[in-house]
Length: 415
Image (tube, rainbow, N blue to C red; front, side, top):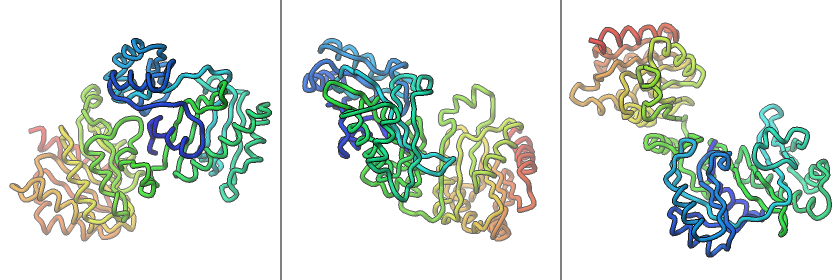
């Protein structure tokens, strides 16, 4: 899924008629001061990162005057909080809160329906405090979420009168946002009761990563789907591969971009590509006991074109510090001759002086449709004669493949 920043989510809320505080996004203490003066005191300074519970992490500061805004902004900007470097703040009007609600529309994998959630125990630690104060309503996606259903949800919590009407209206709008923007989650915590009415003091919007190609208005970069951190340069490049060509997928995520974790646990970093998530996970499990650790996850399945394999292979080999590479396919109808064609072209460009022969151990396991043709292509291009390449066929199990790769590594790379 793709997470939006709070200010991005609030922009969607505002565009769809949900009240939000007056606010401005800033990136310097000077901008923060000017924004606070424009908005009017008191204000809240809120870090903009892809993570929740920012208040408990010191990521939200309240300010009553210019001096407090300046000091708060200087303190927050540039900090590393929950693994993120704080580069932006949302400066917005602070309101006195009479009651905090939690409202959400999310995907329920058990019922395969959207579920509307409302609690009168919103705010910090909602997970611990909401028990016994929360109601759920599964939505028939063919009928939608109607106003009278939203009023029923609010009444279950004892919400009455004008406040019930405002909250039910907001929940209907949240459901419309959920559907319109292909969301997996639309959340407000807290949805606050204030002297001027019900206001969304926070916004959490997560978009289905399979739908970002049609959500062009959100300006989501393909690499943004990596989740709780900013995408790396290579992830951004890999994300572009699928952006204009939906024939198969070339999904790529760096597990340990700076090799910090792998170094800490003393494993050997390798690049990895698998056809199918299941076979990828099994292969990873077989490699780890030998001391290898894939620095990336990559799934090139759904019968992608040779050009996609060419581009993703070049990206995988650009990862710094890798000491080996493994490609393995599941037994499927994917045209492995196209797969091989793309990989071979990439190898010949990465290693032009040796006509494609790599300087790190590489294992290729072709299993499935056109696997014999794929192996023959490697033979025809002389790659099966390379000292550091081993090519296997459909009879090779994941366990056997891991053993073969380990032997290849020990025989050649350790000399």
